Length: 183
Image (cartoon, rainbow, N blue to C red; front, side, top):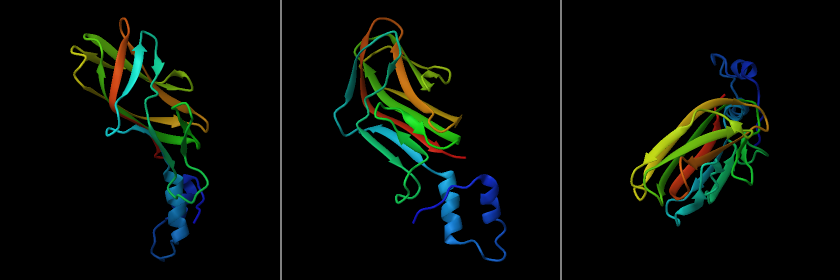
C-alpha cells in the first residue's frame, strides 16, 4: 500500500496525542514514508577483493562496489528518498537531512602512504578530509566516516581517495556507502 510524504507540521497533527484513538494505519505509513528512505552501495566481503589500480595524487572516485540497493520504507512505493546513480553516487530525491556513512577495509601495494578520503557533494568538496597513514601497506586498515547534511532533490554525494606521493594499488576487502533520510 502506497503512502504519502507529508511535511512535519502535518505529521505532528496526524500523530498528535492519541486520546481519541483515531490514528489510522495510513497515518502511520505516511509518517514513516516522510521520515525514511535510503540508498546504499556495498562491496561484499565474501566476494573477491576489489582493486583500484594506480591511485595517485589526484582524487579518484571510489567505484569498487559490487552490490547496490535503493529502497524506500515501503517496497510498493514508486520511489525512495535516496537513489543510486550508475556512476557510484548517492542521490537525494527529497529535501531534508540525511545521515551519510562510509566505511572501508583497505590495504595498499606500497608502504608509507598517507591515504586521503574525501566526500564530494555535486562534485564539490563536502567536508574535511579523512586520512589514514599506512606504514605497512599489506596491513588492512579500517576507514570510517559519518556525517549529517542537508540535501536538496537531485544533490549527489560520492567518496573519493588519493595518496600523498606516487601511485599505489588499493585493495578493498569490504566497503559500504549509505545515505539515509532522517528528517
